[in-house]
Length: 309
Image 1: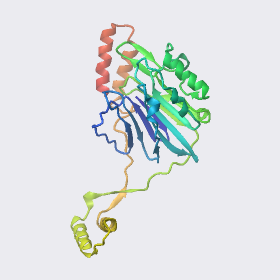
Image 2: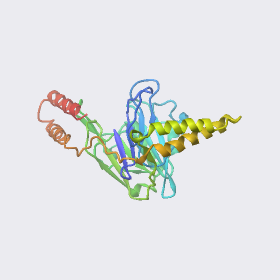
Image 3: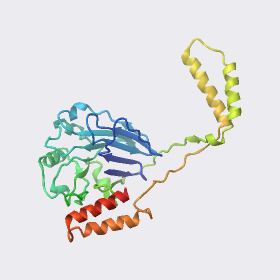
């Protein structure tokens, strides 16, 4: 499941990534900050960050001790002030939220996550103990619930729907946030878009990309060889290393052209012509799920979701 924060679009958050620590993940145009589950399968968190400077927040692991809470955070500078964004996941067990979690609920914070915490106030059909705990923290810390009461999770297996994915913000940010559900692309959780109305100019990188296919490798090699011969060795390894790097860069700038980074387009989106018929078909099946045999409908939904994925 994803949250997408708008700065056209700069940050995405994912829960239940189910990535193993040995799994390599690279997505063009994005920096990835992962928190993989260490001792068992499932779970996992990830931030996907595009064209914006950020800092990872060092969260005291004692906060999650004794619970199965998974949490990560990043900090960006927004209009001259720090803006902290926390990403959370808690599996549906009987354990409570950590008591020290509320210490992180301060100004300039946005919290996003699937905590399996149920409360009618944000759209669930019923309340559970964890939902009551979270509501107490929200009230005590004067945070705002961004959810508008719409369900965010559909269980195709059990034919149930709930608002499990909660978005909350500190009192200084809540009034400036707009919360919107987006089209489902195959997950049992809907995409969520959060737009922060307090806009600022986001500095983008002007770095250029090396175009290795157009490089003059023969001239580059000769320049490097001549440079190595002409550099007198010093007693300091660090000084020798710096001289070597400078020589390599001089040769690269001369014989390897550079160009602007491409603005990467998403591989697929809900507006894709390829996906539109599948999304319409799934919508039709889901809307008619109560008129036919539940087992047959579940099988059809699983088939169409597999095609979408």
